Length: 359
Image 1 (spheres, rainbow, N blue to C red):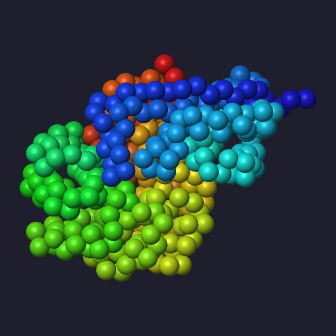
Image 2: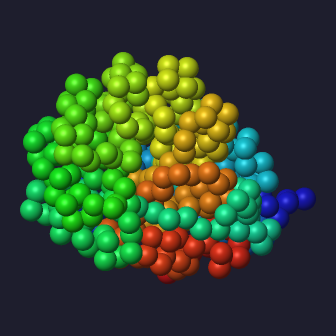
Image 3: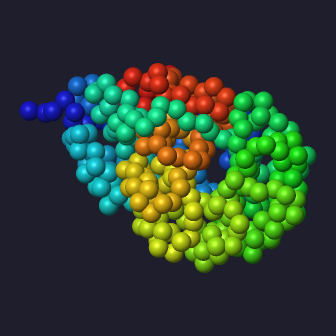
């Protein structure tokens, strides 16, 4: 007899959402979020939803490659039982391990279906530590003239912590933009995110120049390329500010290496890099090793951002929260999700699953 928690069908469709303005990082800019929507239907009719948000400038993963990975495992998933969510995740890791956003979408849909059927919100499923978070907001790459007004617009939203994309190859521009932001938001903690666009020497030079300006960032995130382990070690030791790993922290194995080589103080956990279940493993490693926690994402809609909020709020202990990309999208194709009031992301009203459904 088929269990009601058996996956009857899995479908995937394109989810293209225009941005209000191009989202620029050191590796390039994105004008449209070319994502995917995964829907899982159980034998009893319960549906769960997941989002894949590949970001080619981050790791080369594309909408087409993510969709191909999902299609490659669809037949194996149909007939599986969502109660066996960890074995499902292990199978995905073995078969499509390099397709992080595809793994994330499927695992999100599996856990959403499981907890919708159980009438349990996911933040409770993950531990129930909290039902709310406070996010930062990002100033993407741009000019000095744009930097100050962008910071003021963030403050007008009721958001205090400002993240600044740097590392485009011009240290003078980076410095001038940061100074302009600090001038209009002197009390705002600043997170500087290089997305791997700098060398260690360039990052140290920028930190020295900021020190002369009496500006101390709250966090320096991934200034050097993801495979520059020596650069990360050097900055963790000599950078003078907490160092976060993002691209370097792409798997649980890499986070273990960060621990042993003392190459970061903070790990930015993104479900899109490795799926939900491996992200839980990464959080456990960080807790055991004393690394501080950050939650972030790619260019994601309300669905994926809400899922990340459930993970971070449910587990608790995330000092840095970067779940801002729904504010950059020109459309919201979903209902439900977290309720946002200024910087506060509130999950308390969600009764089951992640609480997001397509319109």
